[in-house]
Amino acid sequence: MSGSPVLRRQRTWLRHGLGWPGLLGLALLLLAAALVWRGWPATARARPPAAAAAPRPALTDPAAARVAALLGQLPPATQHTADLARLVGWADAQGLRLEQADSSAADPGGLPLQRIDLQLRMAADYESTRRWLVAVLNELPHAGLRSLRFEREDATQPLATQLTLRLHYRAGPAPEGAR
Image (cartoon, rainbow, N blue to C red; front, side, top):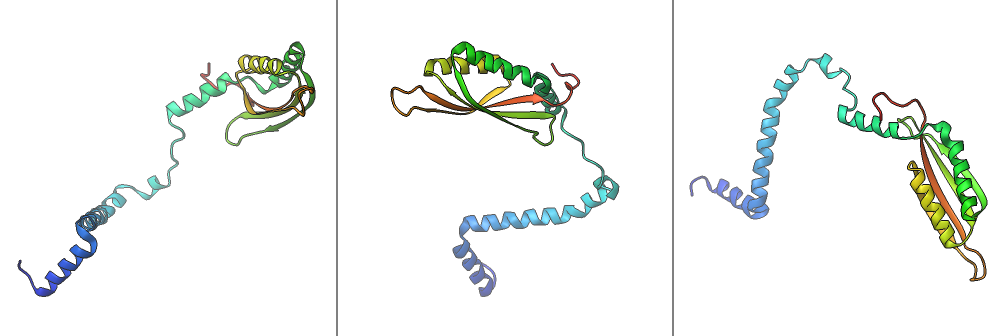
């Protein structure tokens, strides 16, 4: 090997201290830093300051089309009361006894959506509850089951069911090109 004893000691120390993988990583890091440093002024000159402050384009066309299609499939928010009447009618048809019903509405930011959570407490046997829930989820595709809980104090008592349904509605008019 050639070179001064000081360089040989430093090379040996680097090789043993970092190992060959460490040395390779260090060399690649230095190479990347040199390439970035060398190319930095060229990219800064190529882009005028006005272009840097220009507004960026909105969503890409495929993403905007998917959002518009989803919003077009949702029913308008005015359908909320009709859906509640259908839920109660299906419960009566299945022999369910609604004991309590609460609702809360929310507007998720950024999209013209209305989200309504229904907390229901009812008493009935398991099969009637299951048939009712199947009818709700099949007939209202904009409904989702958030939680479901069955309780029974003893075998002689009817089954108490607590569930939360989430209904999504379109808050504004149907988007252009939807459906």
